[in-house]
Image (cartoon, rainbow, N blue to C red; front, side):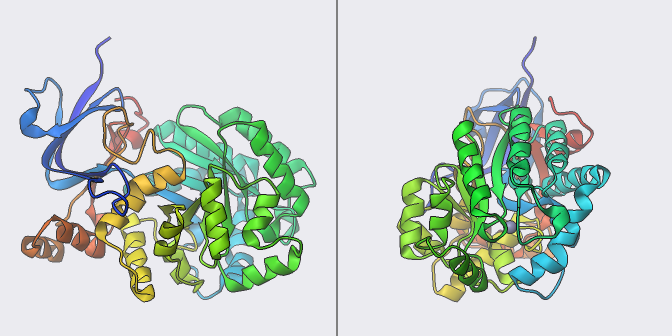
Length: 436
Ligand SMILES: [Zn+2]
């Protein structure tokens, strides 16, 4: 059988490491080719170094060819309440989130939302994400089926909740964890799909459910764990009152056996130095959700503090509390956050976080997040001159970093010129053709 080959040509931009830690992290090839065979990258080279190609060449010269974006934290049942106004975290959950998630008791609604949600991610250049379902197991069946049809790499889990939520969204004493077990056996490690044990947060799970979730992580190797932590000050105070024996918020998850490599904690705005140090030691990661943090008025996450403590950080939209699926919007909000805190935050930092940073946070850095031989060919093509203003701005930029910065500040979904999932262009992915 002849191998399926495709070449993608353009200005290659990819990070091989964290630019804050390595001065050689950036790979930038002004006119380069990514050579793809059977969904995998086999070479990334300057165009003039490759011999005459015997395969189709997608010519994206004038655009940036980058690893597909990876969203480290978002909620697919909340796609329909994105941009719902005017509450803090706990009020927002009651008024908007729980009713939206209750609607998912109807599998047909969950199925339709799953397809729309993934198509919207792809339209915005997001080829991978760590996704919260609703409390209903069938929400994850719907999402993973839709991801499998599109050939996407996806991390997801059903939300675990057994208190402080409407009765129709409440897991029974052991039924939630048992439903996870069934989903894990069905989906975890199937193709590009990974299961994440997903207690919503400390307030909505009893200590018993958190402990059972921790034991589940021991039962199946390679699982991820995702939850929220220290998003708002009111929430932190409530956790302190509810778990008097824990030394701090992180310790609640630590005591339950949830804190380990592959743990991805959303927000982390109010974590103490001790918590950051412990999180780094355990190999956990923070999903930085700047759009959502600003939207709900939760606070400003310090990337510099997380970096200093050695914690892995990925970038996330936290849709629906985050108002945009587009990672360029999240990058821009991350920059504004850093400015408020007086911290440095470059375009390189932003694009790293949205690609390899998130991949590492989700323990997927060996297969996605960078353009290199052996990696899966998940690719986004960005047009830095998608609007008249952007085009004008690009022509006066002094160097590549300034061009990238202008793209981050002015870009949006109009900048996404093409997306490839394992080398397959988006329109073919949407029509169900997942093998190139
Ligand atoms: Zn969230």
